[in-house]
Structure formats: structure tokens, C-alpha cells
Image (cartoon, rainbow, N blue to C red; front, side):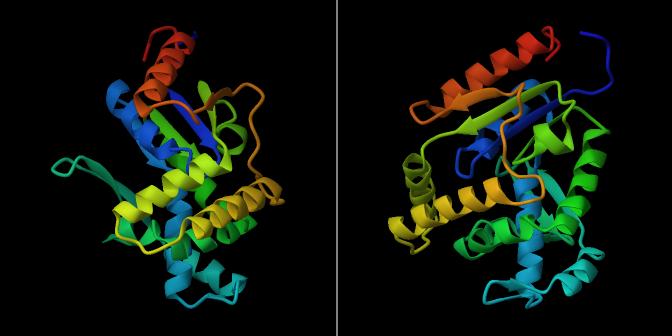
Length: 234
């Protein structure tokens, strides 16, 4: 492979396929910077909710455009707790953005062209500075179509809903499995059918169907592919 200044690994796929989990592990293993683009859309959604900009499923687009001008999203690695954390204008919001209220609304926010333009610009800025592994819906197709390695993660809606349901139960969130599965299917439809940057598999992406895989098996396979495609640089 020709000499280059940075390495970009794109991890795209459906909701609740564990993109963030494996991307964080790969980042730690290979010394890459991890960027959770899904958290960025969730943070914008939280800001819109706090500002009362979403009512009965209708988004006040003009006010959201103004709110975006003052939004700053950052990530920090908490060494004590061994976890990545999301900050909205300096405030820790990791727990708030993972709840069902945000999950029910994030796809609608992410479908807005001006929101995607705002966040894609920032994601590209992050990817110019250092070796990164970035997960989301359109990283390998829109944000970084020139990414060195691209993955597309998938699993059946039932498997993904069960995973999400267990995750929420462990956090003490009161929700039924039926609600979670309906949310997963709704997000799949919106993500795949939106006009701007729909969720699609890049032609050169490596497909990871993790329905019957352990996290360790996923990480092992993906690290092996990254090393193979980077000529052993990673």
C-alpha cells in the first residue's frame, strides 16, 4: 500500500449490531482513535428535545438550524471507568442519549440534510487529524468513501432487538421487548429509505453478519482484515 499520513476504518450497519462495541475494542487493540458518529446524531436529537423542537413527531427545522450553530460535541476516554463518553457543550450526556426517548427520535433528526451536512463536516475534520475508526450509517459511502477498510455489520431484526432489550434491562429501563423490536424495525426503515445518505452497503465493504458471532470473534475477524488490507501496518 502507498505511504499515507492517516488510516481510516469505516464501520457501517444497522442499529443494534454492536458497531460501537467492536469499534471501541478495535481502536484499543490497534491504537486508533474511536469516533461514534451515532452519538453525534443522538446529541443533536437531545438538544432538539431539550429545546422543545420536536412536537408530535414534527421537527421545528428553522429553530434547529439556529440551535446547531451553538452545538459542540466532544468525546473523552475515561481511563478510570474504561469507557468513551459523549459531551454536549461540555456536559456529560452519555446516559441521556442512549435512552428510548432519544432512540425514538434520532432517525428523524438524522434524516435532515442540514443536520447531516453539519455533522459530516465535523466527522471529516476529525478524520484528517489522526488514524481513526468511525462507526455510523454512511461512513464508507458518504463521509469517507476513500476509507482504507470498510465494514458493513448486520444481523436479523429479532437478534438485534433482543440485544437492545437486554441492554436496556441491565440499565434499569422499563420497556417491553415488543417496543424495542418495533423501534429497531422503524429505524431500519427510516435509515434505509431517507433521501439524504440512506443506509446502504458500500460495494467494497466487508460484510459482518454477527447474528451467531461472539464479540471476540467479530473483533478477531475485523482486526485480521484491517491488517491484511493495510499491508500489516495496523
